[in-house]
Length: 498
Image (cartoon, helix red, strand yellow):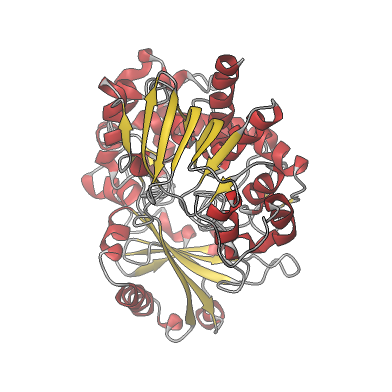
């Protein structure tokens, strides 16, 4: 390992982590390669190397460490959390979440970690969804209040669904048709439901939706994927069951005080062994004697086993030996991540008071979900910031532009559509999950046929290389899914390490 020539004594990584608090991301070098200074080794040995310092990797690391094993965590970026990412308060007032947002009341593993490592859980923080009294529909440059929508001339939905909001008509269909047992969160992988592993487009078409209606409810501001033809209906059934299960814990859960990234930071602080930040992996090879891991800077590491928690979008750029076989290799090549761009603004004028309309908008144009966020706990009705939250095709369109042009295009769209917004917003922060090299998107989504083809195989070990990450979870989704997957991978190795 390279030594830090400007530092003469070894740094106590654990103490630094504890003292750094919210400023961990500002000190990446000392927590990365320098965590191993004075080791004198060219090859670092461990029982387990964990690739990725998100929730899944950290959970696996802490469980294995508690069992007495030597563990090293390798992280490509300069921070902890992966797709749990809280924007800095200095960038956006109220430090909204760039990644994982709400913590469900049934997120037992995550809530336990927060309690164990001293992170307070407060009430939910708003981001992409707002209530009927706080939202305005902007359809074909028409501003429509929710109470006007059912009988509005631009409402294209079948009669049975005209009461549904533009974003929720498809969900009404999923709720009506969902064949999965509500008390069985693993049923989505049961082959008896494989006939539902078809596109949302096909299902909505059979339910009487026109192409225009399908585009509005499922291809506009799509929460997953790009459009209605790229998403498996079976995935939405599983999401619906998960939401139903979480609703049983009403009044519990919420969000971490100071932002959800505080949880993985606290988990990292509790880990007693080495974490190498800014250390992207170039290759990993599984052999009879262990796994060889080579970093991009040609540092060589070796362990008995590896747990790789990377999204498939990042895993595709790592050389792996042996090459995964059959459907698992196809899974790594084909599982995609939802494109997402966020453009954050600070309101410098109360535009909602100028026109008397709700502050947030659900738009069918480049503005996407334009949400007014209230993230001041001392003043819960104060709008602290706004975000143009862009998914699907519009995010891909925006992401092709340079940042300045993208911001101007969204602002122009907003101001032309709603005159009270002219001069009312100050740009604060731009974030794209699309071009983030170790994410490739906001979260995984299953295309038609993929659940049936490779959902059961994606997490199978490849020699001594084991896999985790939210995309490998079976029961849970989101942050709890990541925690579940890390726990499952750790248990796999506990039985092998003895």
